[in-house]
Length: 98
Image (tube, rainbow, N blue to C red; front, side, top):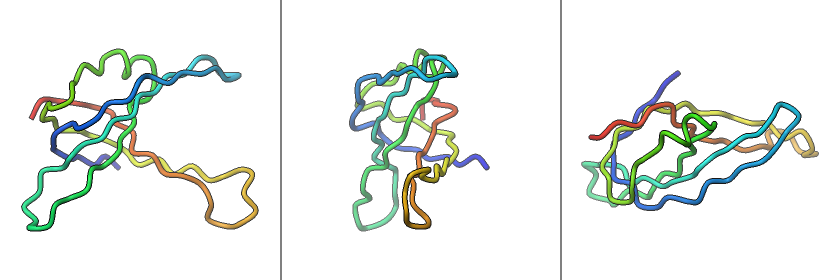
């Protein structure tokens, strides 16, 4: 399922890369202040751009207003001894100016 969100980019982290048996990987994390009609200020949402092609094409800057299309990836822990352990990432699949 694809979700979307519109807001302003507030922080962009450096590119992180690594190597696995499947080859090299890259990712870049950033935060987005979502547009909201709520009287209470929304907290930023943290997103990930994953894969060389997506990272290399991510040209947004802090302060840019963008629309994100993203998917939610749930990654269960392979080493945790308790049930329901792991982490969730919001992986961006498309960025367009808003």
